Length: 189
Picture (cartoon, rainbow, N blue to C red):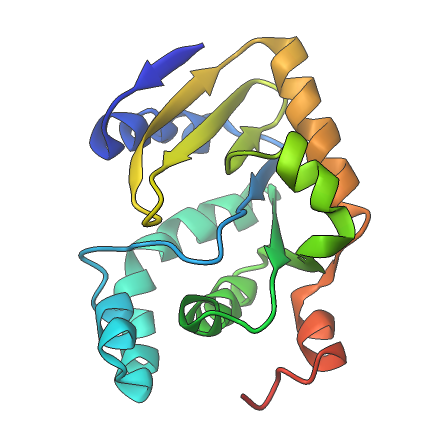
C-alpha cells in the first residue's frame, strides 16, 4: 500500500481510476464534519449564509459535471454510503444540498443511523474510502478538523475485498438518502 502525504498527491492518483472504472465506484464517508477550503459554497455555509451557500452550489459543483456525465455514459454505478448522527451538524445540513445535486447525475446515496452499526465504525471503518471496481482502492486520511492530509492507495485484492465487504455491511443497513430524510422529518429543514 502506498501512502501519499498531501491532498494534491493523493487526489492526483484518482485520475487514472476515474478514467478506467468500468462497473462501479463505492464511496464511504464517515465524518460528520469536513473542511472544504476553497469551496465558496462551503465557506458561505461556515459564515452562516445558508441561502448564498445553496446558490453557489451549482457553480462550485460545475467541475464535477463532466465526470458524472462520463460515468453515466459508461453506465458506471456511483454508490455512496453515509452514516448520520443526530442532531445533524451544520456541515451535514449543507451536504444534503450537495447530495441533491449529485443525485441529479445518478449518484446513488444511502444514509444510515451511525449507531445502528457502531461496532463497524469503531472497529472496521476507521477511514473514509473509495473502491473502483475491484482494481484499486483509496483510503482517505483526515485530521481531527476534517481536513484531508493525504491517503493510501492499494491494488491488493484481499484488502479491496475487505473494503467491499465492509461497504456491503454498511449498505445493507442503509436507506436511500431521500427516504431517510423523509423518515426522519428532515425534508423541510
